[in-house]
Image (cartoon, rainbow, N blue to C red; front, top):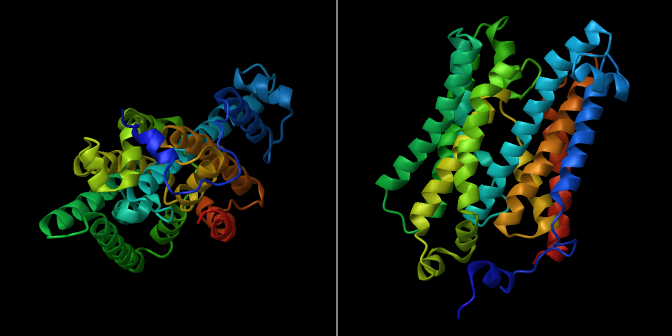
Length: 348
């Protein structure tokens, strides 16, 4: 009998990172995330002890102000950080597996640029927050649909390369239109809001904002989980996938739609946050190997913890909150350079 895709992948010519290929226990991951969440609840301008933080979660701290700070400000923000980080990391791991390229990130098909344009247009038109989020979601999905339409209308011998190049072009076009709206915006009212949104922030997020994003993220994750073993087959190329009974074209389309839905959903509520979907899947791949069935949950856990840490730094570094997008770039860029340097010795 022939070997399955997973076994064939493990015996391919590609070498895994020498760090470890074992699976990190889910109980340990959940414990680490819970500890990080408790730490995030405790620190801030209104500091709390561990016992006070736990009591404030259920409204029994004896301090009404502490209960309000924890339940209405910090808890929704922590939940949003976990959701957005996990979603962006999952999307990044998916795109990298699908395109067989570790340099791919969730905005490769113009999702982030399209969402940014939609949100900026909503702010420019002075729409309410819910409508701005809807505009961002529609903008992100529309950018990817436009990319797919252009590729479909063309006669391309390499559809994967065509998708990437078209995504770069559409992203650049959306970025140019965003810049035009920034020039036309009111410099005292609209422009600061546009700039702050494009840099990414969880400062004013609420549970109401998360309600539409959570089911959209779950809807996008469902096919990725169900198709995790077939996604591994894409690493062999379209011809090899065809011999294994997998329609690479249809599978790639389904994966793109799912990953785009995830990215657009969280970008709509948090703004443009870069580097999470690029760096975190690399770290997860070092820990658990390239198998998508293990890579996806590992990336989500690491992404959730990473963005929670970044958001905690953003609101505690100074009196004026630092946008998340700045911190992810400052931390992610040199870290990614270090990963590439390590990869030059151990990945090839």
